Amino acid sequence: MYFKEIIGQEVLKSRLVQTVQENRVSHAWLFFGPEGSGALPLALAFAGYILCTSRGEDDACGICAGCNKNSKYIHPDLHFVYPVNKTRAGDRDNVVSDDFMADWRSFLLRNPYGRLTQWYDFIDLENKQGIINTEESKRLSGKLNLKAFESDYKVVILWHPEKMNDQASNKLLKLLEEPPPLTVFILVSENPDQLLATVKSRCIPVKVARIGDEALTEALINKHSLDAGRAVEFVRLASGNYLKALDLISEAEDIRYNFEKFRELMRSCFKKSIPELYKETEELASLTREKQKSFLEYGLRTLRESLALHLNEPELVFLADAEKEFTTNFAPFVHGINILALTEEFSKAIQDIERNANGRIVFLDMALKLSELIKN
Ligand SMILES: [Zn+2]
Image 1 (cartoon, protein in one colour):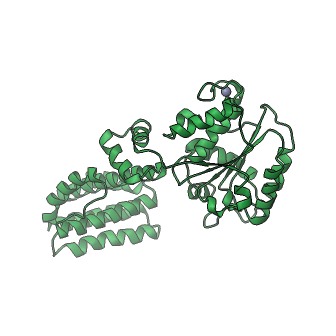
Image 2 (cartoon, helix red, strand yellow):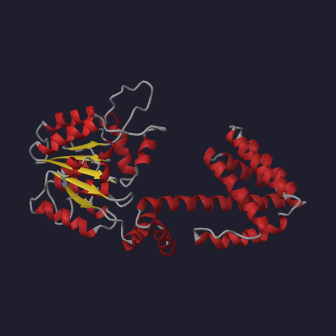
């Protein structure tokens, strides 16, 4: 991660760069800010700048051996600590970050802005919470006793340090009180209030504010190919949280997909075109169960709205016109006589999908019944 890849946070970036250039890198930092503001990407870029052996004026060089390793998160002088837990029954009790290193690297490469629950999903923690245990602190102090391998500094990034238990916190505190030479700790937290006051007091606080609207809009346009109108719409709802913006984008994609598929399916039902129905239901059957359910729930909602002949104001305005137009055209075919049977078909399909029935049969069966009901 480079500073140039960070969304917004210009003032903070210059401050961090300057600290390194003026050789004032303190041994402990606490980067804190709300979800989606980029505290972890900033810590990664800061670490990358510290470890670069040929620093540029405002960013790491991107070509030295250090940068090369940093870009894959495999630099031997960059250490990570993050919450983990047992994932399988066979795992021993004291699992540590290193047990998940390959996953962690893929997670960072996929989205360094990722949230904690996404990390838990990524390593299949199911309903368990991640923790940072005492074994972790022990291992860390062992590693830090060694000399740096390739750089002047050793850097440790602790993600969500509030997940440390008291014993682990106290061990970390000892490290912070008597730091090994040329070691930089960067704690990255969304809930600094949950940290031991003694740990916090050892760190230079760095507040990472919400991302400015202008920078976030620019990122959505450039990184996610949104047009300016839609980007502004998402930014208005995301309140400076890049992750929230990503959620909205993916939600909108789902709605758009469901809407288009529902419209196609209803048109084919109306035409009673068996080859078309077959093709469309095959496609629906190839989706994941979750997406199949989401489609059916969307259909159910649209049917009810068609009957009510009014749309609730959708949160995402850009879809409203197309949906409204379709619902208005479709509404005459949904009436008091067939609405119950229509909605029942959708509800039944949802139940069947939940029971792992064969999607091809469920969707084709539903489509054939719908085409009967819509005609009458
Ligand atoms: Zn470099």
